[in-house]
Image (cartoon, rainbow, N blue to C red; front, side):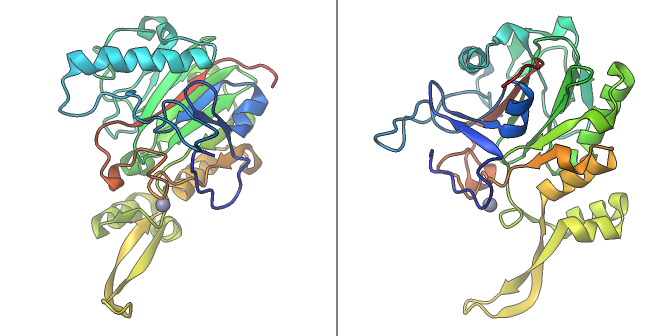
Length: 302
Ligand SMILES: [Zn+2]
């Protein structure tokens, strides 16, 4: 379905092919929290096994904002409506690869944006809210979203976790905000790490390993990085080699550290780069659009 190559458990994300196709996290579906993660497809034709691609959702760098923004907002509204929400309830981030998290207020909702971003909202990569029916949106083209849900306090959080946000433990920052502002107990939280680049695809410079080792400690850095050997033209191992970062495991460790129970965490094994026919992927050279992750603060029964 949609040409996704699942390496392991197909039950972590469900596939929806009516309307604009998307994936939804099974764990959040079970909690009755409307959620999605988009693909490159505008529509899906089950007979053809694929469909039209290229729905504009995210305004990209160096793009004419005044032209792209209304189109992206209109398309995100169509997506939001598939979750029973609308763009008038949307609160978004401007995504500067920070670990800053914003607590949504009613003034944020549906604010006309410059690019993807509300004019007055700068330098946040995550949002949390306990306001009913608020729609949170983050963008990503390899960086996984992390969805957080508190069915007890009826609050949610959504963060963009590229390597810098992951280094800054952005899921833990979101959870700290939820604890302070909404009274969330981490033991009640559920979290999903969405589709994003896998370890095999995510080669990093030594300096990235070094900064993790400094801030997380050598032991944690050893756990989330693997050194892949360098090979010559014949495939023989030669001196050198490159670090690869496991963003999924890094964010899973952060969620555990923040107090989320292990059996409340679900991790997608879908790689956006391995599946670059289905997803936008920076590392595959897609600079024209990104995926959208959305989540609505509504708890119901499936
Ligand atoms: Zn991959």
